[in-house]
Image (cartoon, rainbow, N blue to C red; front, side):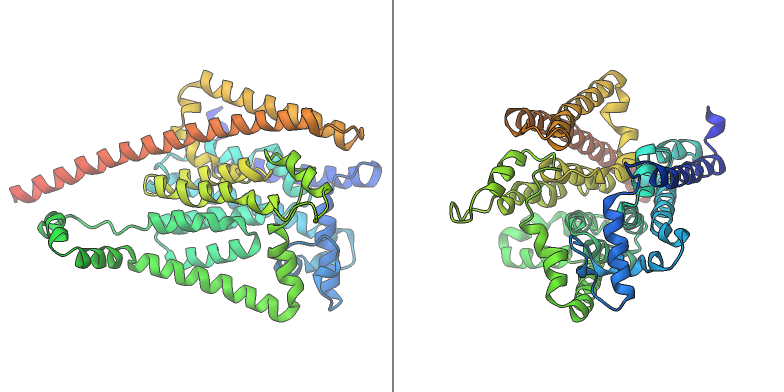
Length: 438
């Protein structure tokens, strides 16, 4: 088995897997009433066709994305079936590039300094995953975002801060949720300077002059890396938004950003608020001025964008980004956005160190999700009202399992941080001893 995990074989296998799915999709689309191509891809290509005609992509109803995506997919408006599949090919290639970034990060010291074989095994969680290949070859643009996220992680860990800022600004413009990584990255970019005699006396001096101490702390927090990260990410994000607003005006703001703040998606959502959103959508605006779909963001943002970054970012950035994404998904959304970050956490996770525990967690996760999907199938395809109690209870069970798994992740990442801190402390003591001897 170990002979398979060579760079050539793994990446050839990943490419072959996506080629097979692409070809299969062409056959299914041609001969089956159930189409392989995702409905979202039809929305993307329609928007690209409007752009090719000099019109706004928002002429296509339900297009809720940045115009940048429609611009990228302009070749799909060209004549020929090959060009129609251009976007699927691009998304599949993005999968491969994302997998390459996972591979090189795992080999770097920040990712565990793994051997080639071991890094390929964990990168294969993404590269050779049939679900990932299916999503991209059906026409989902998640592969593009995955490249941005993992490239962002690579840039930060390699201290290429200017590039990291550009990638973060681009990712947030492309899809809103990556903004949660901003807090983790800023918190991670600490100034790691050796302690001096002045630093050791700082607690005493802070008592005599607390204002001076506060000013020094503030100046130390806004180090060069953090300033560059903040300025470049904000500049990139703002510039792209201003450009799109100048071209498409209010429809750009409404469909790309504002729509998602008041969106009520009560049929395709693992959220514990699912049933309440359904009732809210059915109620008249005159019944209540309380907008549940807006309030639902509060615990989601508090946990994923504030609490987790502050608690974990300095211990393990990749693990923190995974925990953030997992929390974001569990509390309100339904996409498996965290899968791209899973290979960085699993090597030291409790789920692999104790296989029985990992199998239990996976069984509970799959089982409760299957319960939800069964109720969703009865609702969507059989036309039965399963909101209460079926969908509601199965949704809460799935949510409870996700929260339990998130708690394990947080414990693992915290423990990894303590281990690393002890290792760094012992190495620092050895360096001090050597300097004293000299």
